[in-house]
Image (cartoon, rainbow, N blue to C red):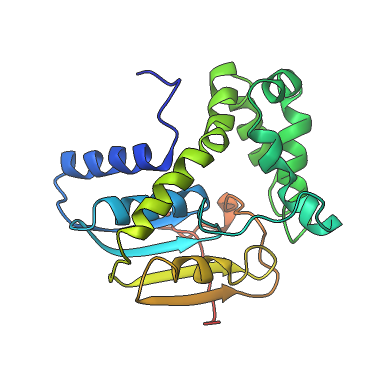
Length: 225
């Protein structure tokens, strides 16, 4: 498989639609977190006859969500600086190669509302995988295609909003109401919730000892915003 292209949301969405066809599902609901929210929107917008419901969490939509100014306040800059860095053509890979634990370790440890929310052993798993040059390049390619995804998002918006039920979820210490505000631009039936309290800015892998006997993580309740 060619891994040098195909990281835009439209291609991801077509891949997912093809996968669901292979699995025997003509119609289906979609849940997308972070990058998955953009892909979920792409899937719902470009395969409208197949997606029955959409859940989008903890993200924005390229081309539709406003971008912060270049000289942002310190908190915003600290939270979002990696977007500009990750979109660079080549220098980012050269700077991070051999220093994966510094770059990704910093991002995993600083982008949580609760210090230490992501166990070190989980961080190590991700860092070890990203030492592979192909994996490192792929981790940046998604960001490099955001302009392409933005063009698609604007085209889908202009084709008209979709009417399927949409649930938009944001974290109190992260995107807040932005997912709801963004998805209301492209859908007519949107419910928004905000996960409040000591929730993480980014999703941390659940600790193995917290899984129940069926292998399921603990349920979290998110009050309606």
